[in-house]
Length: 212
Ligand SMILES: O=P(O)(O)OC[C@H]1O[C@H](OP(=O)(O)OP(=O)(O)O)[C@H](O)[C@@H]1O
Ligand SMILES: O=c1cc[nH]c(=O)[nH]1
Ligand SMILES: [Mg+2]
Image 1 (cartoon, rainbow, N blue to C red):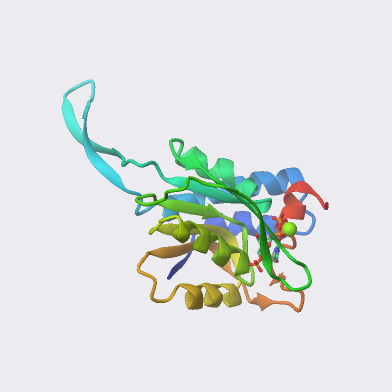
Image 2: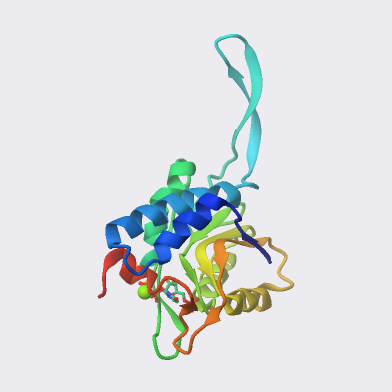
């Protein structure tokens, strides 16, 4: 597994405001959206393209276009939805699948409550969106689901990752012959006794959409 923490002053600047307890939901949603587009630039560095030709106003020349099948973007509901528009802005021809997953607050185990994905993901580059990689249980379960449908190239975009979650993914996917990458805005210090990322930004779903 490969991890990239994007080192860029604009990422750090937006992340700082996102962390701020005084940042309201509308501002949080906007910043999450902007951050994802910056992360997506790095996360799509290996997106597959094919050669093509194009006529400029002056002459014919060579270029590239995205290869088929189109990449699949998979937000993990609920909080991952806050990253969808920022991602598809950069990859407008991507298709979108959905996973609904919730972490039990006591056991910290992830449960899947909704799955809407193509049956066959062979040959598909998949981009999973989930702002928080805490214990890693949610993301590991999501990636297992994609691998089970034939995906062999998975990149996860997270706003924040905990070292414990990255280790969990590393242990889960060692020896798997599929590139698995995590692109994040920052790797934080640790998880607290409730499985929250410290210093973190709190509950991403609640900050995006309110407490339910
Ligand atoms: O790495 P883990 O320990 O599994 O935790 C991370 C997950 O927890 C949060 O989801 P939550 O269960 O709060 O659902 P929500 O997005 O609906 O708020 C977050 O959005 C991740 O999906
Ligand atoms: O810190 C955390 C951990 C899990 N889920 C969140 O939203 N925040
Ligand atoms: Mg939540």
